[in-house]
Image (cartoon, rainbow, N blue to C red; front, top):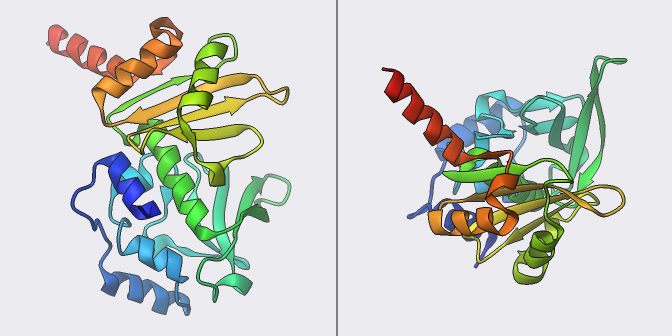
Length: 236
């Protein structure tokens, strides 16, 4: 099962594609004077049109807003604009080029770019799975402090879920169970878990994960939104 189908399984997208029109992709390429790398083009033609996957937290830029920042083609913007992700001009001819990240600095009033991920496929996976855990799926929840993060529950996830190895970073790990749920674990420098973000389209799986970490441990769950809606109805 390829990475596009894994994303489709997670977001319950059936059938694929959820594409952007090829004519619009070609028009963007002509405006920029380039051809998008093959991996990016394949993604846009398969999943590029789905808002939940691409814009629910971090944002894959709309075709009309994709542009260069100096020597880098900017593709993705962090949800608060703290960083950008893109491809260096020198690598655009590659099918699956490496990714750079640009952090905004007040001193220069610009983005400072540095290497980030080994290839474009990994960037697109990171976008889809991060967004899944941050509100792109119907059921999501988070814990954002070390004291509330149950160490035994973390160990259970590490032993009973599959890590998405290509997304491993020093301070975070992604786990899944057949791409029916996403669990993002965050860690301190000393290796202790200090954050949990989960997303799924399956309510039974969601409830199981909430119970695993303790119902009262969660800073936020999507059930909170349902409670708020009920209160608004009562007030009316």
